[in-house]
Image (cartoon, rainbow, N blue to C red):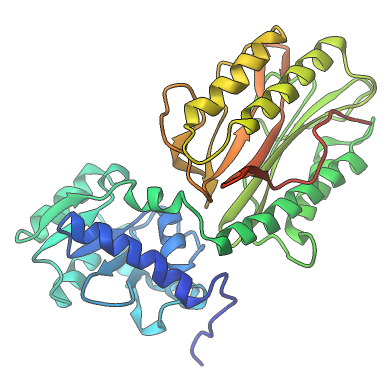
Length: 389
């Protein structure tokens, strides 16, 4: 029997709205057909969240056709049929003979498909920034009548302003992140193995919250003493001890969307230095959120935080956050000095105030928020405090 359609995160009308916005940009850039190859943008335009590894995969958006066409390796095609909103007949699987083939690969199959559909003679948009140079050259060589146009980051910037449906999904993700952080407070104890605590926390990320399960596990970082000066370490073959500090970063994930959250834990009373840094970071976060409004810039948010933090005797040398939505980090706007991106309603950011100061000292605090007409709406319901255990 044919593969049935699975749960659709959004109605068809939502995907058609997104495709319409992309097609407006295609027309403006004189592109007849767009080949989307980055996984986040494929998710955005189709609903597919399956990762096929490092193999040629493309979502073909044509001005001549209402729905896109998707091409991937044959064994991954049923997953696309299951997850995507598009008709199953528009999912094409190329043969396994093209996998690990030194002479031909899936890009050859994709270009051949364009030629079969008479789509290889006009402007072809490619996300060239994310493609190997030899792949771009293959398009030029095998579709000589086409004009190759760079479409890198265009879909990603369209993604940066969320619909109300996306915001609702990100709130569900935030509830999962909150539940995982609460579970962390319950299971982090002296003598408990880090791995055992992590298993419980990640289990909560999967079980979800409010009847909404997590559909994947996003980046997860638990940096316990003596590794609190690091930011991207997982967990160790160690146990928590009295006096340990734990920096936790989790993200609730549903259907490709993420809401991230960072909180600091202390087994026992926090040190005076940690307490002073925490007070400065909280004050800085409040100052940053206070300037969020349509028309403000990413730089305004960063400067408000940095100015307040300096009053407490500390500096932060990394950026203050970034656009978030699909696949955690959306590579567009950053909350940092020098980024003059103008905030718009329904932009969403991870205000990431992790601060790794010395080789033996660091701290984390963050909020995922959206820009509203009235200011900033943070998604987490948890207090901004050091969780003492």
